[in-house]
Image (cartoon, rainbow, N blue to C red; front, top):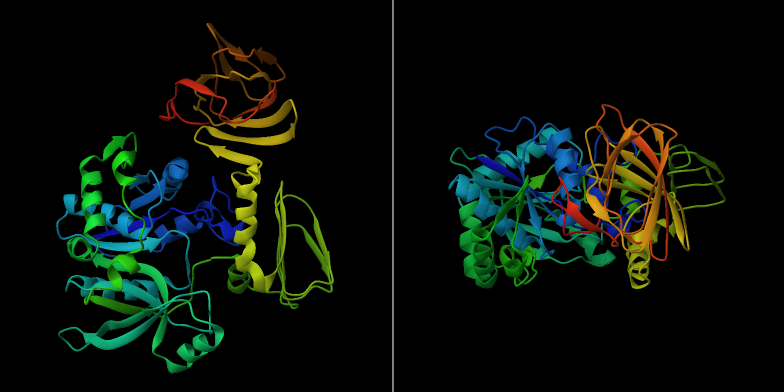
Length: 478
């Protein structure tokens, strides 16, 4: 059985301001896409033989996003929650332990959730070759055939060909892994024809990986085995125990195993591949207009060439730009040189150091019960637009530092306020005093929309005490 392992951690900081900590790039549907990068990764696997349910590894903050997008894709999967990011070597170890518990002969198809791949047939061909090699106990990575002297990727130098019993070439032994090169070295790699871009995707037999991990990184192997023994089932999620897993050192599968083992093999991926690592990648992937521009949303331009302009919530007009990136969202605008797109991460780091909320979430925030959007946020008060999905309910909660006013603008809501439970119809309002236990529910079949006005000295989302919650969030922030 082939078990897909979808690595869905990370925050995609180079795609800020669209990608943010609470809604990272893998769960975003970018323009011209059908579904998110995560969902498209899952869809690419349709038609592969002997395919098991996926194991999705993500962090706590994204668990409901992953579960809902799995549901939308019509799939059931095991969503495994990392208490803290520890890079890919421990992630794959946990997935291997889970998979071998179900099938001792399981082969892991390890895929990043946020990559773009052009041709599914070419991907399936590479997976089938990789599966054949993995069953011979090779640790197989996919290498993308380079099309340019790219300095943003690591490279793999191909070694001796590996054929099956009939003489068909399945792939090559790995001669060496190479770090991201300078421009001159990258050009030499491209011209030689011996190097592939390191895609960071793998096909590995679970038991083979665990054997090699124990040989080359025994400390990681030991901690992950202890964490597996303490794995907890929490509703639809498998929760890795934090007190054990946090002791694990962070390391990538490349550094921990692939660069040390003598069983590393590479299969060439004969199609377009991108890790969608920065805004220039979206410009590369998209079709351009006659001026070489990619324009998304309500955009007007004059004398603009070779640029990527994204309007998320309003008109964006640009004049006299070349090789530029402009990305607009409801609460932030990014302007960058297209050749410096990787440096957006420095802006994110600056925002983090300033503790700015724009690095964490959008004005529109998705929750398992629906969503809320901050319309006005000033000292002492905030106005939100809340949407509660049919049959959904917010937690029974209270706030120590703010009172709330609710007005229903669409649908009919059930309100709990201390000991009172009552219905609130369209154009009706109620007041939730500071310190009152309260809950907002939608018992109907259509979404309920509410305007909430918060008033208080502190309006942060961490001012919340939960008493009951159908989503298992009693001890967390909203």
